[in-house]
Image (cartoon, rainbow, N blue to C red; front, side):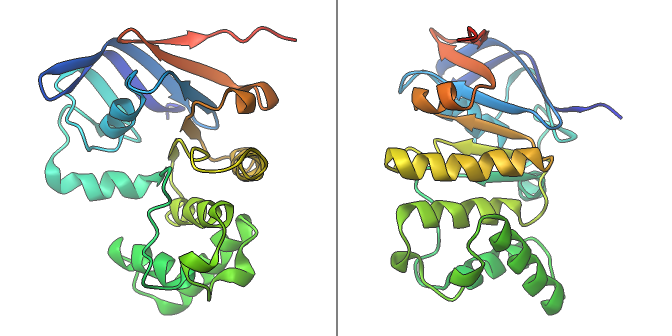
Length: 227
């Protein structure tokens, strides 16, 4: 069994008719923590959207958690997303229901039936992000950092093979960013693979890891100099 959770070969990514990235060759192995950096508009979001099925892959070869992105059918996208955990910059929590009900909604939507198992799983993921006592609260009663922890918990619900974190600290102040980063680091130590788009270079210095950079329609690995 291959350790690769993501492999792109000679991929070109388009937004409409515009070429966003070309000749993309990327591999991510099980257990990796990989940063994706680059200026706004350099293609990070288009890259992420291609990985979770929002943009169709039309050129090159792409495999992610045992799915062939070139052959991905519309009806398979929900199943692909079950094997991925996606964390967004703006949390995307449902504001009209409590944290527990937010997580319950995702479990039901992804085919869980057993009430006791659902409750146990919600407790487990909230515990992992130190939010177990906040399940009864509504999103607006939480700080930005707490909401992002819940979003990470939500991403963990179906024990994903790969977590895609798209600018997860983009809306947070520096101290809260570090707290959220600590949560992601801990999850990674427990064996979850993470690909994180960010423009927060302070985090890269504090938590060095494999880094891919989007620049001039290319993605390449940046070799970090040891201090």
